[in-house]
Length: 441
Image (cartoon, rainbow, N blue to C red; front, side, top):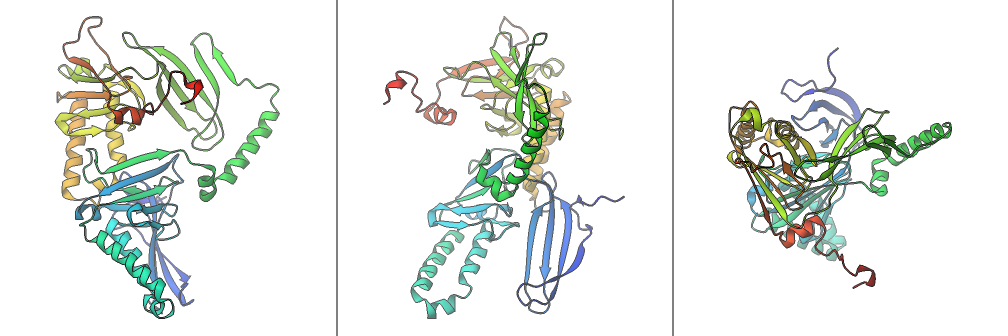
């Protein structure tokens, strides 16, 4: 049986069906294509056209479910090139431009793939529709709209910088990073836990409530519940949790691990018996260190260096200078693995976070840059290339194994530094009061 959703190519099958035109109420044609954007997601591309009145539209919808978290992109545009960045806006996403108090709500331009310029131009076109009639009937309103269109034109000229914010509780929207795999200094990506209002909009609250009700009925049939279980043999603590994928009851297993010549960490693994979802996480058991830490490993013997234990905390930045590769804090989360394992995860992450670096929508420069980095990572993993690995952690909770411990490792350089105000603010400790806090300010 042929797959329903296939990889994006010019030969993709297109399904046609008759449908009613909502402009003239005559028969039109809707075309559907189910495809995969390379290294992004499965999507449904739909296009409608009516020969009777000329009405047409197109839309993009994710073929998969919502992501585990919402996502918010904040792009600082500074020139004309930024206006050409590719943007995917799902039907749940909101676009805002604070400088001119513009908001494009989810129901407007929903399910669209365009550029920053494209979304602004379409907004302008929507405002100018029926503008002549408004000038006659409501001249004051028309004048205000003309002034607003002038502001949009000013942004479209590329001469004025502005902030383009894309907020999507479904997590299915995206803004292109033309610098990939390097950091984009103009683009900030934040993932967040959805609120109940967000889940109501996505229509998953009722599903979650019905699942919780079903689980409660099943739990009522159990004679005794043990919320926390301590395994004396392995020192693993198990406790009840909620699955991030399906919302049902799951188990979280936690174990305290002492890393020699470093500190104690917490390994956490979530397992859901209902949907099979699995996730792991590493947390520091010692809080935030007094100073930040920078660790530099020079690979000299791949057979030994690639099997070094490495702990990358969720606050650490990962760099390979020879590849111009830099991944900010938050990427990959907390990981406790070997250097080879971390490189594999970095490679997988790069292939998944920037779909516009591959396929028909990519430029030759973007594709070539990404391919060079991926090829470089493969060479390092194979032991054919010797590079420097840099971990910079303002919280001081990252670690690379010292093979010569307790003596100094000639290939490993560890330095500490005083955190900046920006570092403390990112860690959430800038305004934290730790002394005499009970007496207020």
